[in-house]
Amino acid sequence: MPVERIGTAFAALADPTRRAILARLARGEAAVCELARPFAMSLSAVSKHLGVMKRAGLISRKGAARWRRCRIRGAALLAASEWLEDVPARPTVEQNRPRNRGGRP
Image: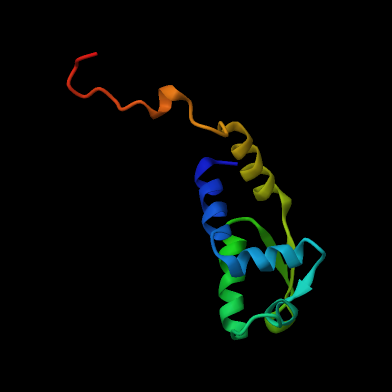
C-alpha cells in the first residue's frame, strides 16, 4: 500500500467516532442504521464518516441507502500496522540532536 494511502487511513482513524464504528465492524458486518444507533447523530452524518473510512480503504459497503451493509477491510489496517512496526518506538539520541545549520561541528 502506498504511503499516501496509509496517511489517509491514519487520518480516518484520528476521529473517535470512526474508531468506534471500526471497533463495531470488527465484530462483524452491519447496516448503516445499526452503526448509527449508538451515536447522537443523523444517518447522513454517520454515512459521511463511512465515506471517509471507505476512501481510506478501511471498510467496504454493499447494498443501497439505509440498508447498505458495511464490513471491515483488513488490508489498510494491516499496512498501517506494518508501517508502525517499522518506526522505532523511541527516538535515538542522534534523532534528538539539533541539526547543525551553520556548518560547525
